[in-house]
Length: 386
Picture 1: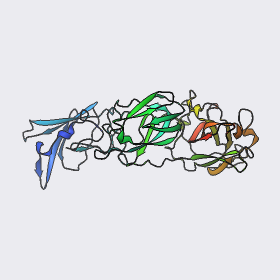
Picture 2: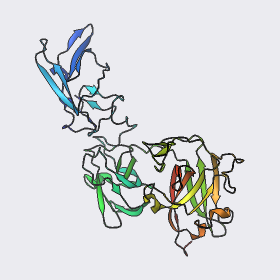
Picture 3: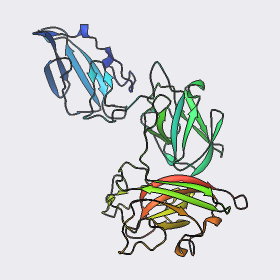
């Protein structure tokens, strides 16, 4: 039998089934087999390559194979099918290959772990709201919880400055034992099991770290609809170039889940709005990174500065068309006055980590404003160091 790449031997025993142990009946030029799924039924006359399916009947599924023509002797194996162990489409369990229908995880486009070649580099995205990975099977100490909005990590003797959405590459993964430790600047730490004795899978979230890929399984291009770049202009002033494109917005884009479940314009499962049609009133805001931790929704406050996607007009009025794609530059010299007075600040007063968001004026009350896209972070220099 073929051993599962995602389950250990306690959760999948079907790799012990060998062809010579199972009764094979001749049928023209092909052998046919019979498989009994306990508490479901018998699948007879199966040939190699045949597809069969059944409804799960419990946390474990038991398969039995007759070993003689009298059908009074059997060998059997079990598969953990409750999804508390990784049930991955495309994985093999002895004589069975699990297809997409009914699996707990999608077929990965490539494998980070391989028994013959372990990864030397892992690519992560930092997220302050951590999750517990089922695939790590309790081996990781990086688990569900709220982590710093921005921090400096120490990993394998290297330092990484991270904030919400920061992507970074950890090297030397194969040289520091079975676990990779992540130290935070407050002295706390957590670890991820990276020896490949448990699965490392793209898009799995392990504590505050979303695993994007590795040296042998590069990250998939992330559908990003907004990006900010901080630069200093010819006069020595900070300006922010923003590029955005949400003309055909991918539902799987990076976004802030802050849509009120009491609002029927929201998807209750994802916390996202459901209508992505660009509107003239859509706008771009710069928020301090730590505001990702506000309650009950992230960024549940006004931004530090903002402007409409049309940039220099009050675009929410009906005579203005939507701007689904474009480039604008936040510049104190050209920003509309209403975007830098009152609650709002000019760029010259900003310092530290900021994140760019593309938002929608929607919902019962604002803020929060419903998020269309979460962009990258930028770092304004401390006052006096610009």
